[in-house]
Length: 209
Image 1 (cartoon, helix red, strand yellow):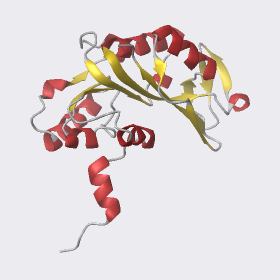
Image 2 (cartoon, helix red, strand yellow; image 1 turned 135 degrees about the horizontal axis):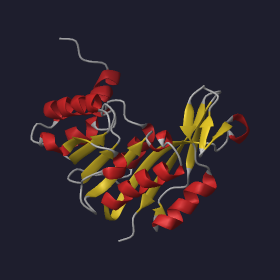
Image 3 (spheres, one colour; image 1 turned 60 degrees about the horizontal axis):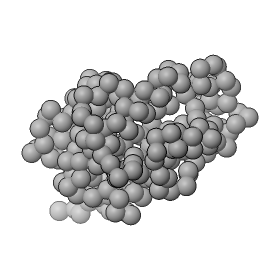
């Protein structure tokens, strides 16, 4: 019997996890037994390891097909989890109670905001369901490092060099939101510049206890 390659083993354990979320796992900030809510989960790329490791996983997405894929993934990797943990919901109108989750994940979601009001509603919706002393992990498109290469379209939305339209934040906006939410930055803002395409910023907060 041929032994699977190390690459396949890692993919089986972690899926296509965001490397910056993997960093949080390595530092022990997300541990087995925690209640983790992936807000805007897509097809579940960041949930493979969490499902395998015994986290109490919940997820929402506005797209029903994505939720179906996540339910199927959970049924395979963590069959004890109820299907009701995975809901088709808008992030700004989630039905989970206040302080519900130890960890809230928001990966490549907030930059789909229609305008500043929609961005605020989504962000505050996620912050509401985060428990005191909880971890908020966010990756989103920004203008940091590409300020002169994005074209404003109004309402906080921009045309990016890759031809897509996104709602963008900058350093000041993220620091202002950190203050307004009462959160604490656990890491400095970290931005990856994808050449001739976009910038993606990692924003990690702790909610006050």
